[in-house]
Image (cartoon, rainbow, N blue to C red; front, top):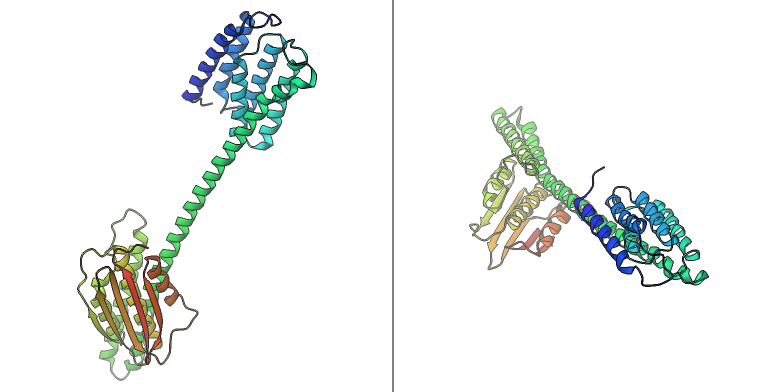
Length: 362
């Protein structure tokens, strides 16, 4: 059984208050029994009991009620001994569920009220039950209120942690979706090229197969980097707008022509905005690779005073379906950072347009 130093100090303090307070209350009324060694022993013992108020609160409150009631039944004067009982009642309500604290509090109340019918100083009959009950009912109500408040705080903290975990899982799922979706779309296109050329132009088929291997390796490396980023392992570089040329080259290997016009990435661009911009371009090109028969797209990236402006267009023979995660995922990425996003047909092409705050704040 482990005792807290704060409980030991509180118990000693209340024991001292009980002893000296009982001496001070001696002689206040001629009806009281004079304070003697037994009275002082009961008052001190009632305080010392509180060293167990957290370890065994049910036992503590019942024992405190017995000691307090014995003190009052013997006719000793009302005094600080009741404060020790008050703390014991509060403790059982604070640290024990109602299933156990309510019976314990009820037992303490019954034990305490015995003195009302024996102590000559107590108010006579049922009238004395009201002030006598207050020494148990009030601290018990306070203890229950504090326990419920603390439990509510703990539940709110646990819920906040759960939401953060869920948000991180969702973020990782979106990252994996973007990386794997992009890689698989490119691999599919390259595999179709290889299958078409393997008999008639083996050399070009070999180029497509090499591109498949490189695309798969890049996607696996990026997924591994995402997983490692949650631990202590060394992190791989996070994709950003400065790597759009590499993205264009991979799309070219997959058989898609990308016209890239991107301004140099300036300083002051937050990592969140940088990654979001890259993912918007990546997902837009992946959709174009899947849905555009022309297999071409244009990418424009501009930097204004406080925003990154991204515009991706491709021929609109077949627009992305409504059931995928791509466009909703892009929209949520951008709006979560306080930006604007739109995607849809525009003058014979499918256009994705995003404005992302450079600081990446909402």
